[in-house]
Image (tube, rainbow, N blue to C red):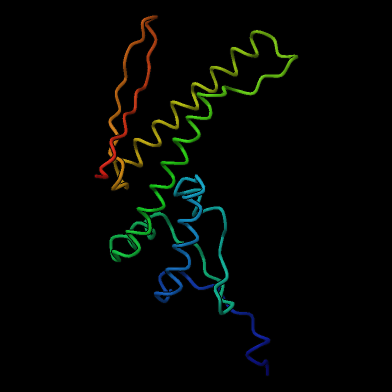
Length: 167
């Protein structure tokens, strides 16, 4: 007869989590969001985590993560803080790209340099859309407005204006 310690524990499914286990998994996901990962990336970066009691906790689906926020105001507030940090990280990345531009090697040709600048512009536009989407959906602090304008040269430009709701 096998002893309990010899029997391997099965992973715990999200629907069976205790409130403490749910908070631990939720915190892990929010830390990923604060590091600049999307919600999906933060959930999928690990299959599971181990809690303080040695239990393997499987990651929830995106729908479960959203449902938990709807069911628990404390988790909702924690997610809002994470999304605010996400927005600030993306704004910092835009500022850095705008200030320093792409990394240019001395051996780069004109076409290489032009391509790197175009990639940097595309990255900035992508970051603007991420900020606008997250700000509109999750953040209490940032209420962005997205405007697509025509440039003097006939090109299109994405303008994201973030309005802080802080007093």
